[in-house]
Amino acid sequence: MTSNQIKRPLGLQLLIYGFVLLWLILAAFPFFWTMWGSFKVELDFFSKGDWKHAISGIRTQAVYGESFTGAGYEGAWIQEEFWRAFLNTAIVCFFTVLTSLTIATLGGYALSRSGFRYSFWLLIIALVFRALPPITLVSGYLPPFYAWNVWGLLPTTIIVLVAINQPFTLWMLHSFFQTIPKELDESAKVDGCTQFQAFKNVIIPVMWPGVITAGLFSFLLAYNDFAVTAVLLNQDNQTMVPKIASFMGTTQTEGNVMFAVAAVVSSIIPLFLLVLFFQRQLVSGLTAGAVKG
Image (cartoon, rainbow, N blue to C red; front, top):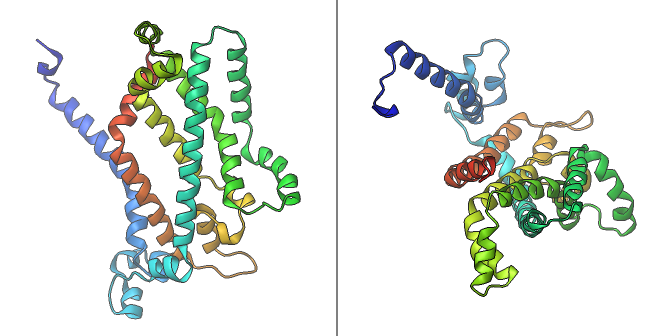
């Protein structure tokens, strides 16, 4: 009798399904509640008198004649030009991931195949730098950026994000390369391939799930970054996370909370679609990195 044929007791099945249902509710409710509230006015969604106003939309109907309104999205994307922040985020993430993966793939492969002891210490040094708070590293870049008049630009921010996230991608891809037997390289060389040809034609196709996994994590680190982008980018080149924070206002300026709510929902949807699209590669990549053989 196989494990699939073993029937669990009814009580255990109900417990498992109940736990999964509870977990889904707790995990998904904040997002769906925020998405629901993004179509309301602030007095409904943040009503102190009666939380049911967030469901019925009484004040939203009084202002716009309907229980739902897209005023928050229109104000964020058009009035406050959130689309610029979205475009800046796409540029920063694309070049950060491209540069990080290129360096980490070559470096991780070289270190995994190196027999010298210095490769271990290089990885330890990289890990130490990754463990430092990013803001402590950013402060060292500010004097030359000011002196060279390159502060506030996207390329300088990309350079800093690559420098901060590179140790993470290097460690991850190094662990993936260690799971691939060295015999594959040797067999390719016997067939007439050079070291680089063996890497490109034999190792990379096997490593593809691991590369996608490392790329996704590198993308998430750049996409969700606030400290680095808030310090290094000026107001014209803001990415989405600092732009959302600016919607909240300051002690000197008045913000619009519903613009921020609509922008938050807009920034979450691309992440959801990306992970949904690459879920197979992500799971297989994480599994490959967890097993050595």
